[in-house]
Image 1 (spheres, rainbow, N blue to C red):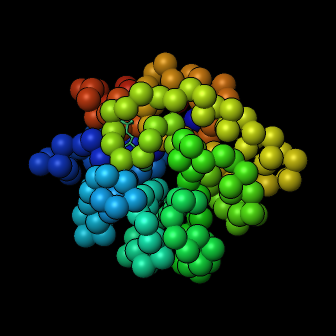
Image 2 (cartoon, helix red, strand yellow; image 1 turned 90 degrees about the vertical axis):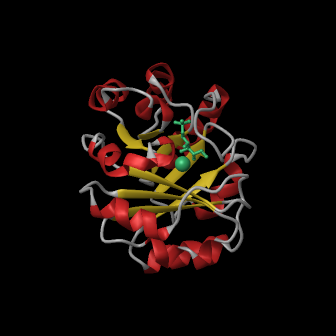
Length: 210
Ligand code: DX5
Ligand code: ZN
């Protein structure tokens, strides 16, 4: 069974509490934090993230799509924060990894589609999660990049060879079809935004993805 992390980026923010309640059968809530600089979009910040955490019991999976994550990390450490993921393409990666470790939160490192797996080799021993982007970060509703499964297979191999236990998460374009491809490749957690929030019965959608 894969674990499911709905991304609230594509939720109806005028009815956010209801939207959060509708995905309580998921395993995590994925918060897409965008600074309008690292990606050409702005989403939401610490204040709204705190409000989301207050209306769910689910662990929080923070995805920082920001150029300078170091200054933001403390602001996303909530009691339920399970992972804070930074991008390998961002600034101060080493210091950010240490800062997340100091908060006693799982360290996640994300790679954009054009970034090879080898870019994160130096951090393999530090991470609890590796996020392979299956779309160019910035927007929900894009198409799944199947070729990214090669990276997943490479990470499965690296994890085994080095006796590591990070989880592999993918993010972008996940639906009932692409979730099957992800499972076969060895993905542990799928992030799904538009697939879930565009449907009526979210609990059913979550079961289908598992
Ligand atoms: C894109 C975000 C993804 C996105 C997923 O930058 O990181 O989490 O919201 O949305 P869907 O599932 O709609 O592609
Ligand atoms: Zn995301």
